[in-house]
Amino acid sequence: MNEENTVFHKIIRREIPANIVFEDERVIAFRDIQPVSSTHILIVPKKTIRSLDAVTGDDSELIGHIVCIAAELARSEGVSESGYRLVANTGERAGQSVFQLHFHLLGGRPFAWPPG
Image 1 (spheres, rainbow, N blue to C red):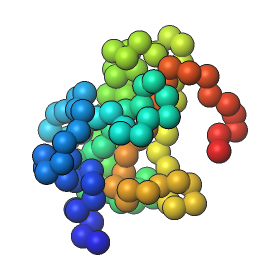
Image 2 (cartoon, rainbow, N blue to C red):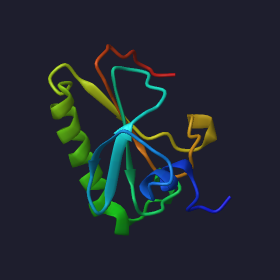
Image 3 (cartoon, one colour):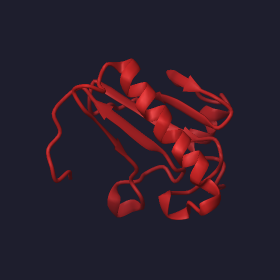
């Protein structure tokens, strides 16, 4: 598959609909269509990066931006005080099913540790 033809790239290009909650020139964030908690937002860089394993030092500003966006979204969703999780699954064994880097912002319910 073309690395720029994932479902997330199609959302970025507006080829398929999504419930977008945030977008700027570097990042798009939208509600997961199969949420596992009352707050389940996917935060996706617009730059094609297969997974966390493909991140380089050149991406450090982008990754920092994503983390800041996640914190802002957690506050706007009302889950920052009760707690939330920011997750990036890396590789099939870790549960990554779309091979474009993305982070899951999860909140609104208790989470166990360890996950999985």
